[in-house]
Image 1: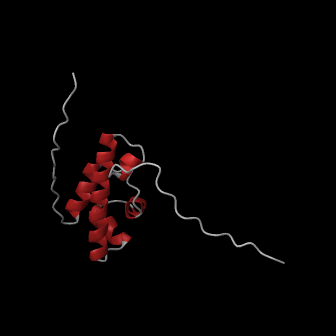
Image 2 (image 1 turned 30 degrees about the vertical axis):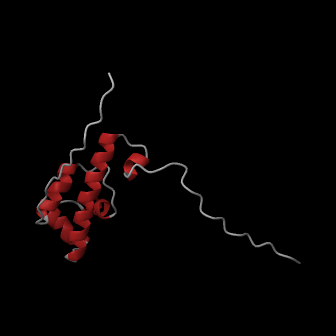
Image 3 (image 1 turned 120 degrees about the horizontal axis):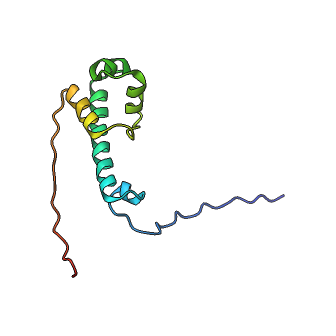
Amino acid sequence: MKTHIAQKEKPSSPSRGTTGSIFADLGFNNSESAALKIKADLLNAIQKIAKARGYKQRDLEKILDQPQPRISELLLGKISRMSIDKLVDYLHRLGAETKVNVTVRKAKKRVA
């Protein structure tokens, strides 16, 4: 009896290029995409600090003055209900300094 072994297919090429922003690629508009990128960067900094200092959820509850479910959401990356202001506050409570870096792109010529 012969068995058929399926050959692995070669990964297909993406059907379109990337914009350089995962959020834009997922369909968010420019302002939503920018806000999500900022939130992701802030979250990443919070998680790095917590990991480097060996903080447990109980430690973060006290430092951030938040209940355990909120800390769990934070550590799991569930930031949809968290504002940029709240994430900046968390970083401040962790002793971090936040700075904003704005890069201005050249304006495209407008066609009248």
